[in-house]
Amino acid sequence: MPLLVPCTGWSCALLLLADWPLDLPRIPLPGIGPLREVGGTLLVLIVATGAFMLITMIAGMITLGVHAWKKYRQRTYRTERDEWRAALLDILAGEKAPDALSDAVRSRQRSRFLSFLGVYATSVRGQELDRIRAVARPFLAAVQEKTKSRRSVVRAQAVQRLTLFGDDTHLPALRAALDDPAETVAWRAMMGLARRGPPEDAHLVIRHLDRFSNIDRRQVTSALVELGEDAAPILRQAMASSMSEDEPQSAFTRLICAEALRWLADAASAPMAKSLLEQDADDPELRAALLRLLRRVGHARHAPAVRAQCNSEVPFVRIHAARALGQLGTAADEDLLASLLYNDESRWVALSAARSLSELGLTSPIRQLAQSSHERTSLAEGLLPRSA
Image (tube, rainbow, N blue to C red; front, side, top):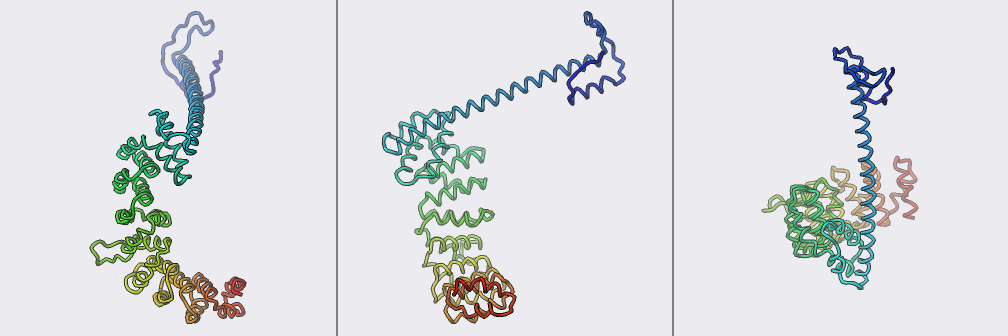
């Protein structure tokens, strides 16, 4: 009599096992009619199939239970957020004291509550932000303790929350986190110090900059800019650092400081940038950063150092030198820029020269190029409408 079982991997394997020639005793099963005697292998198959079906049912029940638990937690969190939001809005409006909400948060809710507060802390300023920090203040001691956790993700979250909600008493914890073995923790500590620390912390931040050389330079520069204009003297000092000094700075650090000074529009750094271009800036990327800085804050008296860089062997240095002359140059630079426009091997250098000629009102070389059969005629034609 054929036996029907589910066609699964386990049952198929056991069916093959059932046909294997094994010398097993036949087990008598009284009261089963035709299956009064069943082979030992076939019995194993029947038991295993039943066990597999039982396991499948249990797994299905566990899946349903987990799904139901997730739904329950989502409803619970949604209810919590609604209650917290209503109370927080009253606090932001000045109708309730901050501890009215803090006291209502249970210990097991603290992490979720701080995540909830973080959304608002990043979108408000002034008095509203101060009130949010007052709400979070009772929980910051526990947050600071988590900066010593063995898990880097917990430490990184703690540093971020101290940045959002902390005050001056939490700055030592942020300074210590700069030396954290996990780069993500140290990076968040640096951003926190740049945002919340005094300008004097620029020294400490600059000493750790090389650790973040693999991060987007715009992000690193943005963090330095957060230090503010009061940190500009420290940034200038680091930018001017040479290998002969007691505490030399790397080319990467000097480049980032030059970029931060450009974003801060620090006019006092222009003479230093000119001097570095003439004497000390060997790294091409640093030279390009100094040229961008001079384009932003320089004057005509700084132009000689820029002109010299138009002869650089590095194309992107020539690009930034040509662009800087658009702000610092005079009519005397027409021949130099025209030479770059016609003869430089890089089309990008030629385009920078053409734009600078247009900014200086020296459009004659551009018009001549547009009327010629030169391979860069299309470049000039694209600039003529804006220079007419």
